[in-house]
Amino acid sequence: MTTTRALGIASIVLIALASVHAWAQPGASEAGAASNAAAASGSTTGKNIRGADRALRRKVYAAIAKSKDINAGDISVVAKSGAVTLDGTVVDASQIDKVAEITRGVPGVTSVANKLTVQKPFGGQ
Image (cartoon, rainbow, N blue to C red; front, side):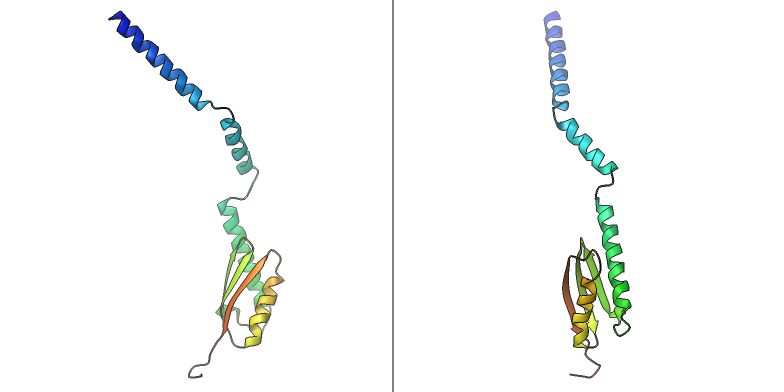
């Protein structure tokens, strides 16, 4: 009985030592500390990226709205990490390139995908 009890206690001690060693792997704590430090220092997180995308989208809309001959309400702007996609309609074909040019001039825009089309009048061809 005492031998069985001693073996049980020794087994528990060995399992406890093995689990403590597994949790204290070298380098694991440094990696965790580095990621926590990066988060605390204000590095880019998903929330920060979405906020920056929304801000860029508003800047592009504001720049397009400054041009009185373009109806910015018919244009959809999607911004993702500096890449802007324009979609919607304009009344004249020359406005397609003008909107893209205005968008490229906004600080923070790295590329423009222009999917604008000319709005056809009702009953027109």
